[in-house]
Image (cartoon, rainbow, N blue to C red):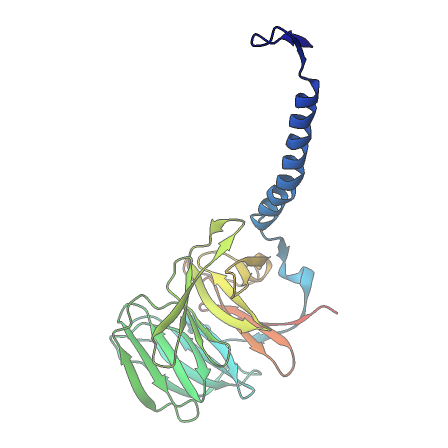
Length: 280
């Protein structure tokens, strides 16, 4: 289309200008489109799989049906468990996998509600729910070595990468702690851009954090650098196999035997401990 230029009275052709604008628009879109696709990919929800899709169930072992499981982990090839409930919280040490019986136990103070636990640098750390304390035991004797007072938030899950502690408080945050319980960094956990609430028991497995989601049958695998949920496992088939459950007898307990590359899963007051190995 040609129009008249009022300043010169000459006819002016705008087609070159329109072509230039079109080219600029194409260049802009070609630059922005990969960014938009990348953003969409970054905010895509993690794939959901049944636990049996990625792992083979090797064994179903006995578990103490009275144990209100809060933490589950291996140290020096031996299984440990921390349990909750006020006046009933304890550490169960060197659990016999064949019988579910602990070789040794120690009770937490009656006022304490025990939560997540792990061993780091030869010390056994146990969080408490609302008491603002972290108890530190000798993992061999279960003697109390020290108490860290003034912990600033609720205690839920706890694990370690061998040098630092990773703690949860039931929100969408994880906290990196030093050996004295001081917070070094906060991790914001998200799945597809959405905050992941109710993060409970934690376990460090091959550079990732596995976490139970409280009151669900889900386990999420979290990248500790970014906080991104990379995979979500549905363990409903395990819970369905447990009889006579109370409302709060939920999936909670992830332990990793690094030497044999086996993952142990259980729940609060479950009578079974499930052993999985990665599918080759």
